[in-house]
Amino acid sequence: MTLNKHKNEHFHFIGICGTAMGSVAAALQNRGYTITGSDQNVYPPMSDFLIKNNINVSVGHDENNIPDKVDLVVIGNAMSRGNVEVESVLNRKIPYTSLPELIKRYFLQGKRNIVITGTHGKTTTSSIIAHLLNDNGLNPNLMIGGIPLDIGEGGRFTESEFFVIEGDEYDTAFFDKRSKFVHYMPEIVVVNNIEFDHADIFNNIEEIKLSFKRMLNIVPENGIVFVNGDDNDAVEVTENCRAPVIKVGANDNCDFKIENLNLESFNSSFSIKDNSYQLPMDGEFNVRNAAMAIAVSDFLNIDQQNIIESVSKFSGIARRQELRGEEKNVKVIDDFGHHPTAIAATIGALKQRYPDSKIWAIFEPRSNTSRRNLLQSELEDSLSQADGVIISEVPNPEKVPDGELLDVESVIENLSSRGKEAFIGLSSDDIVNKLIPLTSSGDTIVVLSNGGFGGIHEKLLEALKVK
Image (cartoon, rainbow, N blue to C red):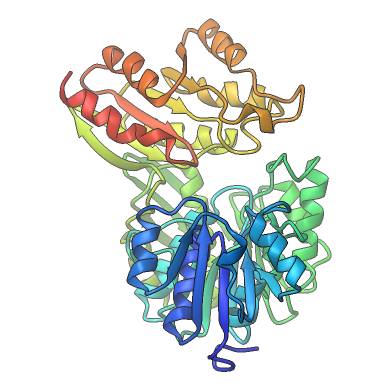
């Protein structure tokens, strides 16, 4: 099935206000399909985006939201049995699908799909690849979990043969427990790294590796896989892949070897295959992300001098070490990090960027893994890199199995024993009230959360303004 067939079809999206759901719904609406949707939480900016694209959205879930003559219902990943619209679809025997499968059927067929995978760095690597292709006139399709600042949108659908898509190992839907990335018809795959994550659906890292192996098993022989040559688990999952495998990393076995690394504030320089690069980002992990993008661009025969110039112009991604504001010479940084490895990398990069600054880390254990105690000691080690730490109480603790809840008090006690100023925050307002009196001119506050965290960034800036 392609986009040019059956333009009179009517699709209904359950959970339409998710970033990817809304972007795909708008793309289909703009290509002539009839689109409706519903969601429990309908608010800007997604509500404004959907209105702008003339999509009718019902607030709340009700079986009457499902149109009588709908052709296909797209059920979002957050939906489960018991949702009244899901039950209505099943009872009425209406055809339904997941978002990843819809993307495959209506957007990815016939495209050269570049699928970026791994526990960490997917959004940044996807964004750098998208920027390199876009900057060199290839106008790629995009489906990225963040917003590349050079492009201004994470979801974009063009007539280009290239599709850059972030490949998540999380499951597809309540009725399809395969990882999302197995739907994405990969030709070019990046495997950044593999660590244990998504504790709500995976029991151990071996299950995660099996999911990656299944995805790599569908890469065609004329495709290619770029893998982190310094990550043993990532290398292992590529061992039986029928497509060529190219290693990218810092050791001597890597085909694209990162050399002459020099990390400075707001800038990192390095070389690969005798070509020198300047990346306007902090941290070794971002150099590794850029190296993957360089290797992919080289495979696509983009001129090497153009790659060098495009890398030097990359502007970054929203919510990745993003400066949200500065008041009284105190900076407030927003970052999506929530896994211990990502937290450590972010704090390390900020120490590189602001070497004379006191770093305050505010962490919200909101993800399904960070709410659990499975990586509690690793979390302590990561947060200990900051000078001061505030951790919020675990949101929705009732959703965590008995005996697995993160012990925030224990983490705080252990950080305090390491000489860190460490506190528990009962709410975003409580955190602001505790932290602001402790800040001094020149400090940096980094908010680590994969959610909105009660608007804490704006609250911090407002409190600093009147301090």
